[in-house]
Amino acid sequence: MAQLGWLIDLDKCTGCDSCTIACKSENNTRPLTSPVPSKNGRGVLPDHVSYRWLVKQEAGVYPLPRLTFTTSACNHCEHPGCLASCPKADVNDPHNENNAIFKRAEDGIVLINQNVCIGCRNCIHACPYGAPQFNSSTELVEKCTFCIHRLYDGSGIRTDFEPACVTTCVGNALHLVEDFDPTQTGQNAPTGFADPSYTVPSTRFATGSP
Image (cartoon, rainbow, N blue to C red; front, side):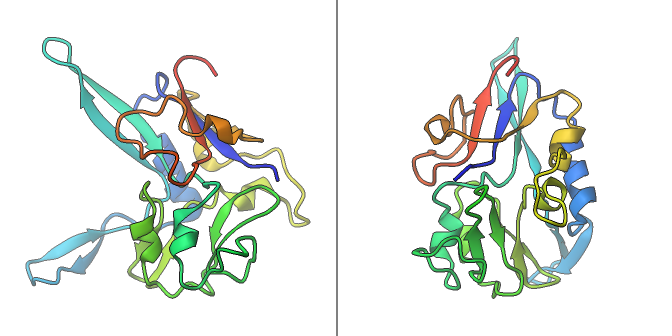
């Protein structure tokens, strides 16, 4: 089975948020400004769904402080924690599209079947990368789909298109890997990236030109 994956060049990411904006526009996800009443009655809480986001971290010490950026989304893991935790998915049959969460056999993309999801949020708690997100409007869970609607035509043939985040990255920091090598999982990962041995994410990191 081929596995699509990500290559993220940490030195080239400028923190511009182009990838997050492109993702939100492409997938029309719930906007950040959607307010919902807080349970304690003290106003409203921000409510949004974003398949891709930017992690900003302070580093260095005075007089040379710096800010680092890492673009983040679903890593379409080899052993998805979200799938394993889902009560509407069979871990022994992970490729079954009738599961609420399934992993496509042909390219390794992990998808959530909105017609089967019950919104229990087990997957949100199980994912070490924060990819699944609850949509309070639909009361279901969503996440990055690798822009599968761009990758394949109506006949299921692979196109030359790439995910919106990749094509929009102004620094050429984000790349689609056509056949990800699982032995490179989490390679050169930045501080805070969860131990890749948990789920074997299809993401590796680099510095400089890929």
